[in-house]
Amino acid sequence: MVKVIIVDDEILARIGIQSLLEHRKDISVEGNFGMPQDAIDFLRKHEIDIVITDIEMPEINGLEFTRMIQEEHLAQGIIILSCYDSFEYAQKAISLGIDSYLLKCDISQENLDRELDGVIEKISRKQRRTLNLTTEKELEDDNKTKVIGVMKMTGDKEEDQGILHERMVLLLLEEIIAKYHMGCLLESYKRSPFIVFQFSEKNQENWKDLLKEYVEIIVQNFFLYTNKKVYMGISSAFSDLQEIPERYRQAEEASEMRFYDEESSTFWAEDICWKAHVPGMMFSDESLLDEGGMEIFCQELSAYLQQCFSERVSVKTVKENLNRSVNMLIYSVLKAYIRDKETIQEWSSNVSFY
View 1: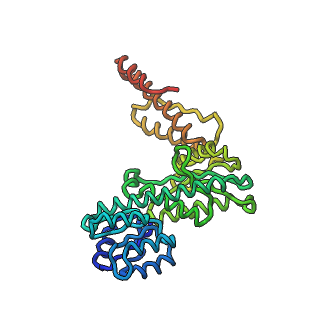
View 2: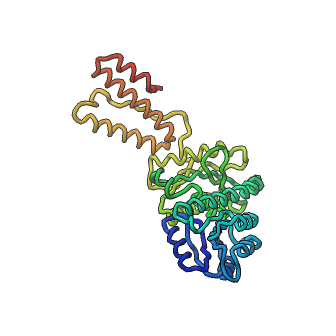
View 3: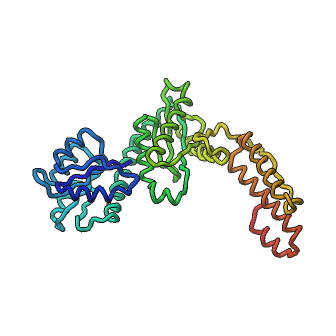
């Protein structure tokens, strides 16, 4: 959740800005202030991500207010609002390192959203750069047990893109990981962001129990702030950093086990059968189009999936096997009921039987 305060000596301006932010699920307005000094006092006691401030205020103007915020590192981003379309004002503000300069006459929900999105992205990049500088050193400790966690979010992906922006997910995840000292968030290997959970020597024996607590904390926080359920695939433990790509693959594949069980939130790679052998699957093609044929098909499919689940066969392998079996079933039905060989040949050339 991105925390914001609004500073403007005009109460109607503060109310107006806050009303434009009410639709943002990723932003929390922590307070609004008519006097910069009151805002400074608040910032010294609370962690705030972005300050939205007027440039012209009594006692302390917006530029001086900005300078105080920067010197004491009281916020990560600053958006200045101004009534003056003046290059000199903008130049001074930019020289102080502000993140956005917006004319009050141009303020609309769309424009304010765009400026906020840009500042949030800047903050996210800064945090990731800082994280990358410290992460490698932290991960080099071979005495710590490491585990990869790949988090997935349930629900409509298109809806998530509109409401739960990727940067919000990253910021929330980074905040949780840092607060509970879980480990590090990485964005390497051109894959989705993932967590490297780390456990010190004193937690070597109970790291699994601690990891379950970590996952539960993440699940509860995401539901609290986003109203979305998340689940996580967990790799087997390792210590050598060279193993990260392989362990990521394990965690990614483990997360697919939700295919079998939508109620669970944690899926362990060690529960997956990594053997090449998988249960065979052949559907009954002779009775498929007869009365009750689809019922038989569903029973066969259900029995096969139950067997794969009990043996913890990887979902990728199951889907590949099912794809082949269904294609063979369709091919058998086409041969039995369609006399046009060209149609059958055209269809079979576009599917896989192996």
